[in-house]
Amino acid sequence: VPTMTVEEFEAWLVEMARYAQRPSVADLVIAALTEAARPLGFREIGELTGIREHRLTECLGSLEEQGRIQRVDEFSKFGTCIRRLWRLKL
Image 1 (cartoon, one colour):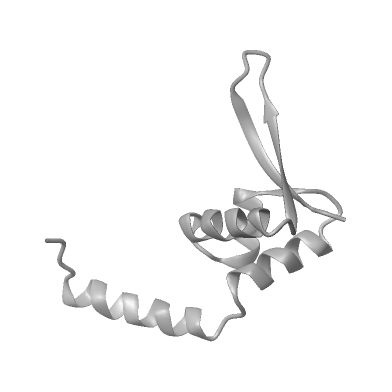
Image 2 (image 1 turned 90 degrees about the vertical axis):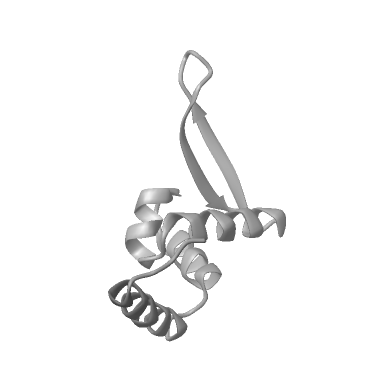
């Protein structure tokens, strides 16, 4: 069973309080995509929102399912996905 130290628990409480005051992840991602002159990838959106990547991945997947954004994968000549971007669906 995973456990937290007192310091980790206090840091988690601070993080949760800060997160509760923010707009929703979806709102932040949509705002970032809307304001961008180009598509944004994980790192860039993460820097704009300050949200951890696993939460961001979940949010982007949900927005894609809703048809609000479109995933654009770029592949190397060997067929490996080298970059994943999202664009607003117009």
